[in-house]
Image (cartoon, rainbow, N blue to C red; front, side, top):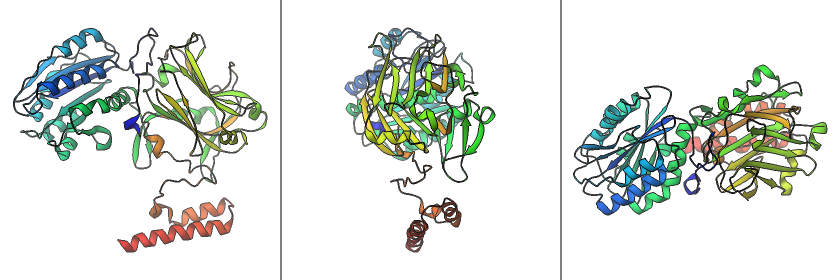
Length: 472
């Protein structure tokens, strides 16, 4: 899961290549730190080091991330106002000089203070930028937190809650943080353990600033980019029958140009880790060609990132940035035989889980291979992002595409299924109460699968369903 992924911050910006922040999107980020007696001065030093390490991965500046820090006990104290420091080095010096206060734990008062005295006074105004508060506490608050947290949320502030040790109350952390709690609440056993969640917190903070858009999936909204939607495929390409009866896909022809400025698609770049998913089908001579399913180019049309299909070798290639090669890019090639079915002219789902250490290929939900990456560098967002182009050419490849998305949360890799691919039965647990419905039965029948098999599936599902019902 994402909680044990390790990241080096990924740079996605038009900046010198030695920079290493994770995002260019503007954001106001405030840390609200418990400085009560239970913390003690040694642990407070650990908190400061953690704070410095997280902050180092952000692009600090007037147009980028501004960081504020509040320490609280009986009363909140403003150590670093938003927008005071415009360089990482100044900000880090200011963080290192914060002194531990001691006192009681009034968390509600501190959240209200951050809302009124930092976010409300931010010179960047109320709209258009991510406003995030991270509350770090090791005990139950001696005042009311819910009203203060709700007031902050009404103003568009996103709250994370991190509880340290056994004295914190789960219900209180949930009251402080945004929903869902699985995304915004973290608990660790002691102060030494906060280092373990540093990377996942950094990834989450980056997701909030880089991925404002939501993609509705089942009952939840996933942060990410629906590339087909942003490229306006509904207007550019012909609708066609998708991978299963009743689904829709787009028929892309060589007359269509699927290009958009990267700044329009990914204004803040991409987060350090993400999941790339494509459901596609292509046939005829394309099967023997080498083409980029998706690519991000520099202003002078050099590739920075790409997911490519090589028909001659029947391999999948992934290209991303790195500062460790003269070209500024690195390419890894997936050669394991199971990936070769991508070239059989049928519908398939190609999925890549990308982290800063490696990339894993899945085809139709089957894990194929993991390949190591050098730490990726930034992308310049002043070029173009393109879909379905022959390698090194501007010509569009004729193919059919049903889904093309990038999910910002690496955990979505565990939730995404390839159920849309005929013949793939997901290993995930199906919600049988939804499936045991005659519409599904008719849908399967219309798909002309072996009738005995359908009856067997339907029998098993229905049986499970009624067993569940009777247990209730």
